[in-house]
Length: 277
Image (tube, rainbow, N blue to C red; front, side, top):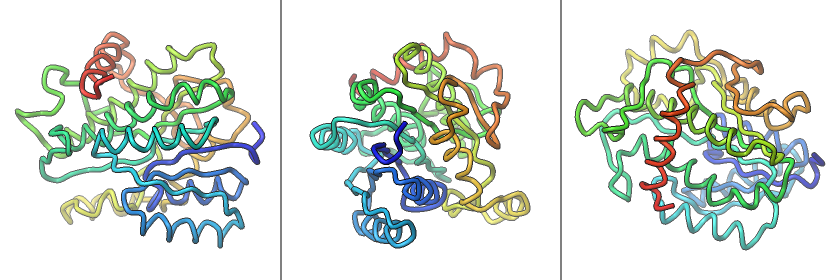
């Protein structure tokens, strides 16, 4: 992969791990396309990246990951402007403390953390395959090990809980990775996911103070949290690795539930219905 000709999309790049990932990849000479909800924040980030790396190849486009309409508009705009995409990093994520709904009336954690990357990836998949070798990277979490997929009630209309909703969405990320990797076998496109570590990011901003206090001693900086993402995006060591879950730049174990391909298939079909694919 010629980094000077590489095009990468990174979601959630205006803060935390995403911001550090964007700065690191820009430093490698990679052309960045950043979908952002706030164009003002996006423009500030673009200038910061250029100042820190000297790389002015940063394209900021508006996209609200809580809206299927907005995701489709972004993908359409991207596909009109670009004919190649070598890296898709589905980094954005939320952790809500109260049950909320997306613009489309879907439970917000499931919508943003799973359905958004599912839809975005599928809308860009033809371009990604045409750009092979290419890589898709999904930021998951070790908390997926606490979850199981409530396929009969993925929005948790009954028994919603902040941690349960977040954990289920991260399990969905791993299942999505495994299913997509299997589908893309032999295409030159790899798909992997990762646990970034417990990162001191805005993800915890709305958490109760006692949770933040418990987590604080174990937290790492966003820059350290981005290391495994950057490794999966750039290292030649993983160019032929697909369908795996990484932590600290190594393949790590996942829950038994995350390996259930029947559940992965059912989640895929359910996600297609939600997204209108």
